[in-house]
Image (tube, rainbow, N blue to C red):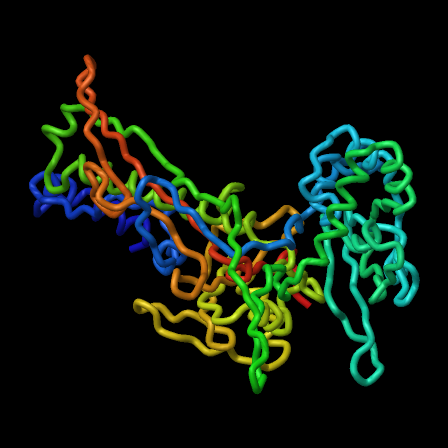
Length: 468
């Protein structure tokens, strides 16, 4: 008998028992709770120390610091022409707190655009510094002489950086390093002579530059803080110096941010369809999960308090070879004491792992809440998919020292709020409308604060698409 004839014979045979399709009508189906793909590990929310904020505002008091105004310069591009936004010139230390937008606009017009190729020298060690370089695009290495006479890389600058700013305040300034293009670079150059010519006509600019020249005469420590006068190693009866600790007159305040949504559930669903799972509970649970995902995203990316936007300029590093190598992470860790955690996109962790494989290195791992987390120099490297990846397949790696006692990064929240289901997270009943729909207001209050600048560091422009 052929296979086809055997199949037809089985189909013609009368049914001898109850079929599964009919039996399923009498059976109880085992169901899972509603699932969602958006849920991630949220290591930042889990590991960040949280501080209860009364009154909705947290003020960070610091010692008085004179070294302010360091930041990134933003440009606009029209075709092949690049221009600096006038207000962004206020990021230069010599122009900090200067607010005359008309004068800044004229300074922006006096910037000259120049193009450099890989290997070109922008500034030579020992020569007179007469220009400020604003790096619109590309990478520049700062090269110096090592202790044994060989070349040493002092740092890598990328888009938005500037160098040579001392030329605006000191006519006798010289280049203390050689600036060399690593890639093709587009640079805007602001000559000191152009600034001086404008200062002769603009009295406000002249007065401002004189005030800025007087600031270095203040005795400061290496962090720019007003120095505390001390005496040590003396003998006899010398006069002991008098001192006091000065504070910032206008310390930064962090207001709690909010993430909210209104959850709507029809009364018929809430009343009738609650077995074996409560519909209201499941709706609230999934909404809260989405709210927490948004909360972590804001802690990373928010322009007011997000970690990526609140890192000081001197704590931002560029990878020497584009890809994240062990040397780059060592440099990142060396910028602060007691780094407690590293955050990186999973693709950045993979790229770092490939660099370790090339060198024959195997990172140690530690067990955290049942998860094997890779470490570097004993610091856990947590995955965080909220760190953005650009179209050019670059991303960032964040290093944090955490906790109030260590003057680190802390999370801010408000505990004991009305209708709270978790600290700083509430679900508030808003009533039933005429369409018989129940409404709940789901709210989370949060923020983050960097207590001192070196508590937070970022390795920027990390390439994740290189495989060789």
